[in-house]
Length: 162
Length: 174
Image 1 (cartoon, each protein chain N blue to C red):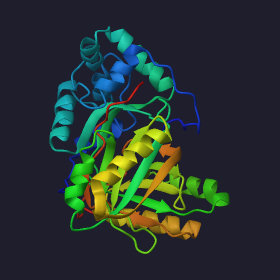
Image 2: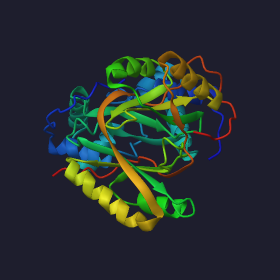
Image 3: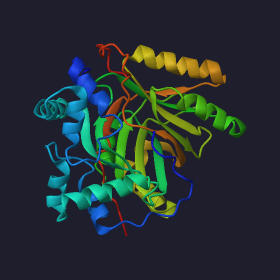
């Protein structure tokens, strides 16, 4: 679980190197023995500078992780779920939802449906169990919105820095 | 998309890397050692997982909030089913849309079938993006809404539980 994002944190000042790393490696991280050396070569820095720059980004909470992202529904099943939670119960219900290891994203959104989360499990059956358990424990209905068709899945996108 | 079965070693590799790679000079060697594998085998398996489409990307994954992209909006649209696939492809091709997909409606409470995520440094910026999507959809769109994210309550990589049996062949559903 990544560090919680404050509601209105000041944007983090980034070095040119950090921007270049985020711009170039939101996909296609080099799958080689010394990936940071390969990244360094691509951005004109040293291997040590790249590792330090990434470590600082991670420390500051600006880098969720360097790693693999699984495609949905290839090695299991997933769904997007939503709940309309009375505001005075939001913390309680959010904690109940986040406690499931099958929940990997959980967001508060400005809407009557104010809690949105992604459930990933080895099977559709398990997803239905998780959603039913959340409904039973919270006493609130859950919208189950499984993917019908993807047109674009996050492959990184250009960060409009300025 | 067809569901696939993971062999036990692939599964271990995914489990071990789910929280991200160590920031060491040789991160894959560290991972391989922990799993009792040769580094070459681990790298070959990761490449294969990516080719098979099981791993979507290996990447530096930013936290947009922390970088100042504080206006993160899930735009949702009720688009005529007859045109939804064509229009979904068009919206998905916009550079400022990071995710775009069709999901089922849940009437009467949820009439929207097309989802597009947009990100900006201000709501003014994301409202402009939303207007651009509305213009593309035109008359095929009957209603729309926008859900700004207030805060991230939990965000982790994919989760495979160590005790899980191998992924079973379940129909694609989620």
